[in-house]
Every structure is written in C-alpha cells, then in structure tokens.
Length: 143
Length: 164
Image (cartoon, rainbow over all chains, first blue to last red; front, side, top):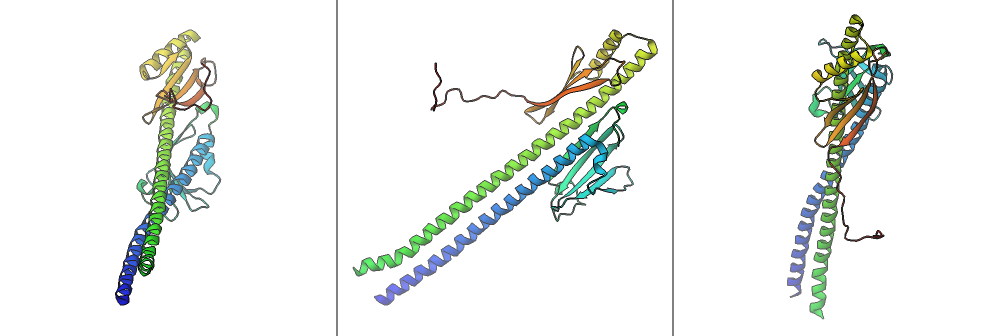
C-alpha cells in the first residue's frame, strides 16, 4: 500500500513537472513576445522623435541644418541630394531631396533602427516623414 | 488520519503548481497585451505624424504655386500700370481659377489640406499689396478636427452635482 502511494506520488510529481515545463515554455514565449513588442514600440517612438527634429530643423533653417551635426552628403548620379546621419544611439537617418533650391526644399527623411542595413528600402525604415520648406526668393531663404 | 495526511501530501504540490502557472500566465498575458497596445499607440502616433508632415508639404506646394501666380499678377500690374484695386481683382480671379479649393475673403486666403481622415491643416494667408516685398504673409497654421467632440451628456454618477 505504501509502495503504491509512492508510485502515485511519483507519477503526480512527474505530471506536475511536465505541466510546469510546458506552461513555463508557453509563458516565456509570451514574455519574449511582449519584450520584443516593447522594444519595437520604443524604437518607433525614438525614430519618430529623430525624424520630427530633422523635419523641424529643415523647416526652420533650410539646408543650413545639414551643415552641422555630422551629416554626410552622398553624391548620386540621378541628381537627387542625399544626406545621412548616424545618431549617438545608433539610429540612422537618411534624407533624399527631390527639390533642392534656395527657395524650395522637398524630400523625405527615413529613420532606421540601430544595426539595420540603412541602405535598404523604405520597408526597413521605422518612420518616414516628408520634409518641405518654401521661402519666397526675395525674403532671403538661403541655403 | 493517515488518509488525510496522504491527501495533503499529494494535493499541495498540484495546487501550488496550478497557482504558479495561473500567476505566470496572467502576468504573461497582461504584459503581452500592454506591449501590444503600446506598439499600436506608437504606430498610430507615427502614422498621424507622417500624415501631418505630408499635409504640411502639400500646403507648401500650394503656397509656392500661389506665390508664383501672385508674382505673375504683379508683373502684369507693373507692365500695364494698374492700380491696387485692379491688382486685387486680378489676383482674386487668378486664385479662384487656379485654386478653387482655397477660400478667399477680402485679402485673407484660407488653405485647407486634409490630414488623414479626421483632421484638416488650415493655413491662413494675408495677401499683401503689390508694392510690398512679399506677395503674402502666413498668419496662422493649425490642425483642426473635422468632427465635433461628443462628451457624455449625463454621467451616471456626479461627484459634485451641478446646481440646476
């Protein structure tokens, strides 16, 4: 009788361990998924802040905003002006200007997460904002 | 007595395990739901910001075209020696033809550009006389909601009831 009780206890113990392992596996997946979503959310928020800062600086100062802060100009054959900046936190911003004159600026800024291949397309960008500035020629909207 | 002791030995382990599993799964689901909503909020904020800057760029494009149209009017006025009133008429006619969506009231021009589905970026310009250096002046630029906020009319519980 006592032997049988030990066997039942052992069996229950094994079932408990198996169930616990299964539930821990599932719960860990939940926590990992939550962590990844939280990280993604934070990345989007930070990227949005960077992109907004760039957009407002371009709006206020025009292309003068690109002369300081470590922007690197890329020469392209298709006539578009491209600039790139790697922030201290690892995010990368890329600007492509379609219109680039003294009075008119129009382009797109895309911000990529740290470690991402920033040479990729718009799909990899965390956020993408239109940059625009128009200053009438006579009012001294300079580059 | 023996049976009671045996029951306690068997059951406690299972009960504790069930309690731990319930706690873990509850916290796991809660954190996942929270993170998912946070991600959704971040994406919505990013979308709203993208829509705003797209509308802002569209407004700049309209203003650029308006400025060019007004410059053409100024040149026409200077060539033909027209007066300020004639310039105003010419500008109003030109803007009405080129930009029917813009509202011109006196020398005030209002440009509405939709921001997504529920908001509008309204930019107010003042058209200046042709003797001025610039053709226009931007008075204001603001985002307005396209719908009325409908608050709860009669709350079920009022902490501080209003005097009627």
